[in-house]
Amino acid sequence: MNIACLDFEGVLVPEIWIGLAERTGIEQLRVTTREMPDYHQLMRRRLGILAQHGIKFRDLQAAAEGLEPLPGAREFLDWLRARFQVAIVSDTYYELAGPLIAKLGHPMLLCHRLRVDGAGNIADYVLRQEDPKRHTVRAFKSLRYRVLATGDSYNDIPMLEEADSACLFRPPEKVVQDYPAFPVARSYEELKAAFLAANEAA
Amino acid sequence: MNIACLDFEGVLVPEIWIGLAERTGIEQLRVTTREMPDYHQLMRRRLGILAQHGIKFRDLQAAAEGLEPLPGAREFLDWLRARFQVAIVSDTYYELAGPLIAKLGHPMLLCHRLRVDGAGNIADYVLRQEDPKRHTVRAFKSLRYRVLATGDSYNDIPMLEEADSACLFRPPEKVVQDYPAFPVARSYEELKAAFLAANEAA
Image (tube, rainbow over all chains, first blue to last red; front, top):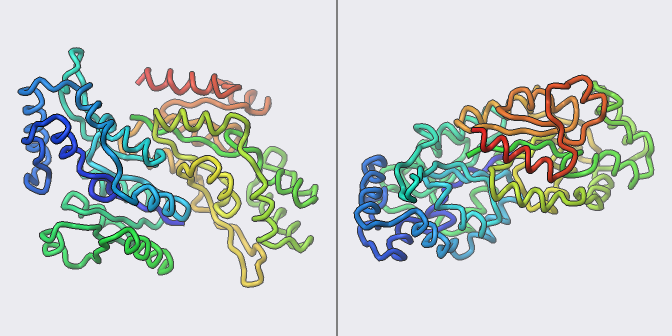
């Protein structure tokens, strides 16, 4: 039996902060790790923007409720869960991802937390641990599973490197250029084929 | 965020081998770890009985298709998955548990495998690792999660000991006597209360 470790945003759901930008009308929230690779710098910027616009945690939650999984994501995930054990390994936050995870049938999600203060403001973000995606693959390997992994961006590379089998899913061209060794899937059908091939190779 | 590690048989579903005994009509298959604590001895006995009766893997699979989760188990699990990340940690086999896991909405299942030979006989069983339940709790703790655990029998004790918070669920009286330090839940409502209390204590 294999464990499939999937990135979340860009693989099963849209970029959550871009959705929040559209729903709150704050265009500055559109910046993601693709434009600003330093995650801590990006998150401090996001929290500053929220504070500046007086956006409360409940406003973000309401915006998150309006988000939908990518077309075909639920069907792909159902197919995958019938054949593999699945963990979604993400740098998102439980407090924002909850509605999307419910719409996907509550797969296991391993990610981070937001800290909300008594006034309902997002006071801080709490990363579960440094290098979380690599550690997650190692944990499942310690349980004697083979780990197959997919993701679309730079923060997924440690997970893909640590996995027994890995591919990129709909990555930006720059990621493909920087990491040409990883095969690329551009549709859920191609991703299914990649997972089945990795399974049979075991 | 916490991870809830649940035993499978006795917590969410009936004892699978007892169900197989009823559906195949082979009463000797009723013996479980409660009567025969040495797991390897028990599995060798089971495989011997299957061979003796000419029971093929596909017969066992057909019997497994007829099994149903315990009353209220699906509702309890849905409640739990909306509040915790859930892993089912079991000494069962993927090949037998599949239909029950599908009926429960495909939660993550960490268990073992059967090896089927070319003639369709169950040739052997393959444990994922020794002391699998304890290792599973350790793996999630290595990801900086608090782990809450529940189970009903002796093979769950390492998991309950390793967890940050643990209780027994509908255990045999002998298990309660041997491990009086663990609180006991006797219904899903009591189990919900135990998980919520452990969560708030964090």
